[in-house]
Image (cartoon, rainbow, N blue to C red):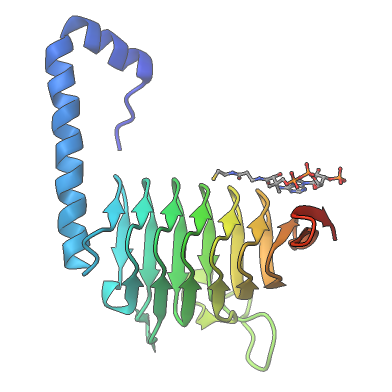
Length: 218
Ligand SMILES: CC(C)(COP(=O)(O)OP(=O)(O)OC[C@H]1O[C@@H](n2cnc3c(N)ncnc32)[C@H](O)[C@@H]1OP(=O)(O)O)[C@@H](O)C(=O)NCCC(=O)NCCS
């Protein structure tokens, strides 16, 4: 992808303001048309997909209304990988916002509630390349690409959850309603409702007290 620097745009704009303005408007219009086409194909007419979004396995993904993906969302329900076959389900509620570069990958089950806000560069998955516990484990001499997908578990994210930038969520994981995940966290296991959780692994640091309407140290 060609990256155009802001100072280069400013110079071009100075040289040919109306041409550049027209080009920017045309880009915007084309972006909206492309998003509409993709949204209709996915059966989610109110979905907005910014530039660089990739949706793979749309038949296994259900979208609520009013979902906005800023740019570079990579959302995949993986139905086959080499000789493996899967029946994944990804469910996304209403009014969910994805900032830049969110990657969500499912072979089993990922549920995202309504009114969830995701920051940028977030990774959510219900599997790994290979298994590192249990009966059959992966060998380090096998290429990670050739290792069987598995070794994870379902992911569930409640309503009104806010997920900070650079968070990684690997199932099995469950985040309760109203929780906040601090930037740069890694989530596995259970984060209770109305908790602020941070760190690696993410642990609650505050819980909401509905009597005092304040967040108190956990
Ligand atoms: C978690 C967050 C919401 C702040 O919550 P807060 O309750 O106001 O945090 P506080 O300032 O009271 O900090 C409480 C403690 O947690 C620590 N902390 C806060 N955020 C942290 C994080 N992301 N990772 C690790 N520790 C964190 C603080 O350093 C502080 O530690 P201390 O008690 O040892 O001093 C905020 O830090 C955060 O991570 N926001 C996400 C921002 C983002 O990614 N936005 C994306 C745009 S949508």
